Image 1 (cartoon, one colour):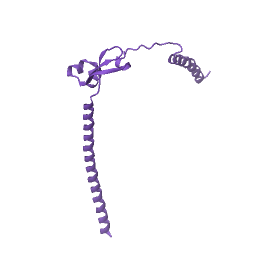
Image 2 (cartoon, rainbow, N blue to C red):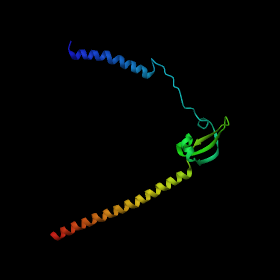
Image 3 (cartoon, one colour):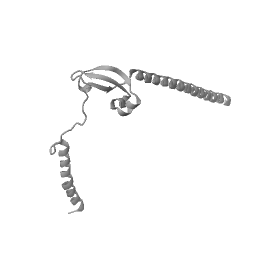
Image 4 (tube, rainbow, N blue to C red):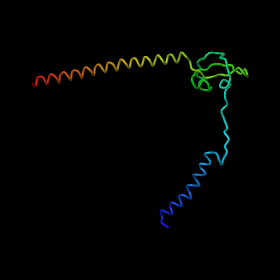
Length: 141
């Protein structure tokens, strides 16, 4: 038997059973797995709720030690309808969002003015170069 034929047979004997067992494990035919969820849903994620206190800023201690504060820096106190449970939920402050929006708009306006001035300066330079070229061509005639 030639070496290449022996290599082909050996490959088939090793790779095909391995791919079948891997495919079976992926599709779940041989092994059954149970999904264990380690995250518990908060009552506001699965139930109706009412807001007891509006979105307020967390203090520095709460930001470091309290999970709802750590996400956005703001929390609101809510009451779940079904079990009457009071919880705290991370929220976004509308006035912070508005301030960030206007800061972004201001930066974009300043950037627009700077870029327009650069375009005008570049256009003047190119116009000057073009008029110099035309003037040299006229003088050479």
